[in-house]
Image 1: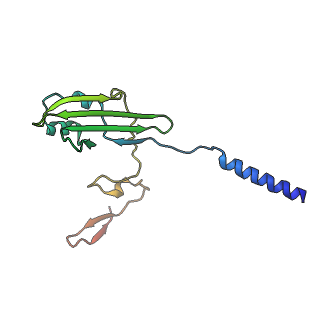
Image 2: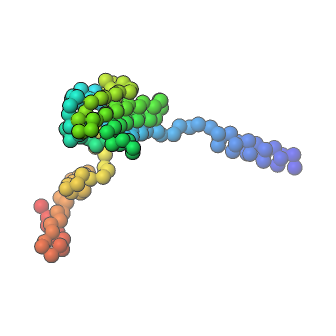
Length: 156
């Protein structure tokens, strides 16, 4: 009986300790918002129209709900094994839609680790998703659509 109690106690203790141990969990960087760089901000000049600013910076993440003259471009990078980096550019326009003020927060001059891995993921619109798959060395059948939208299998 005493041996059974020791075995149960030992197994419960090992279970509790193994549940609390840190083996290692894969984390990845989480970028959110508008990517804002110093190069983009340096192209902005007072007097630019909202359309010109949109061409340089893209659409803003936030437009002030009570004042459409203020646009906020916010970029936040939550680093997997580090802190959080945040950049913010606030643009203010006059009543005619011309840029009059620019405010920056965060270090825009530093390079950001933007992932450009070419892994299999969502296909770019207008491309064939089968082109992203690795080749096995054998000829792959090509699908061709007929006017009746029926696929026809052709070999190369």
